[in-house]
Image (cartoon, rainbow, N blue to C red; front, side, top):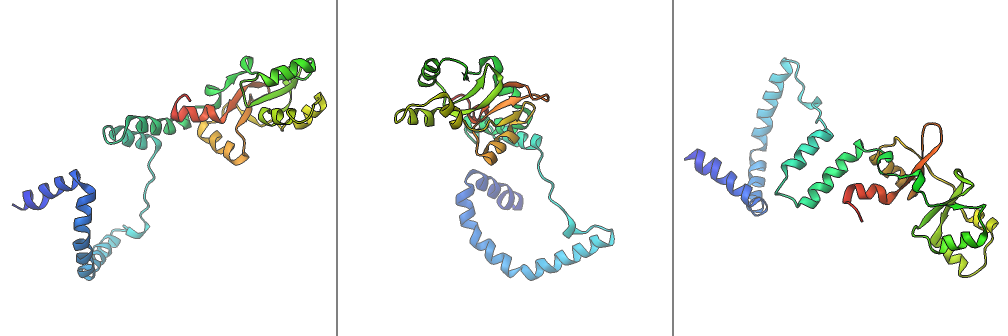
Length: 225
């Protein structure tokens, strides 16, 4: 009777309807905790004192943090309890510490930039037809990068005044460089700390290997935009 009606059945009911069951039993439990607090304190005191004889100090016990692998296991075990989209998103977040910037960057040969040595008309045409919000500006090749242009700002100014090459260079922001071996979870925080959303990826010798954006990192979590 005790096993069925005081153990198995209540636990099963509580597991099926945890919120409703908690609200029902919380008041009686709160009353019982206050009534029996002196007894609980007395019993715990005796038990802790007994453990101290054998050099076990309860107060010094530290809660061990969960590792990424343990968290990943918990997320896998939540199959059916949360939506598959949320589950995959959580798993991708945990995998950020295993993926580097090099894995998601736009390769060097695919970087769309502005060569300041080109004719001014060609540069204007490139700016007005660009599919990107930012473009690096360089001299002859990407290794001689000068700055990063915010095309939305440039186009807004072009509607009001005529610009020259020197004006364009003055409007270029300082380039933010990212090491190619940086982990994505760390780089996401770096973008936030530096208030940046784009950077040029460099190797250990300082040579430009590619380009990475905040969107590239976020797509590793939520999937393709």
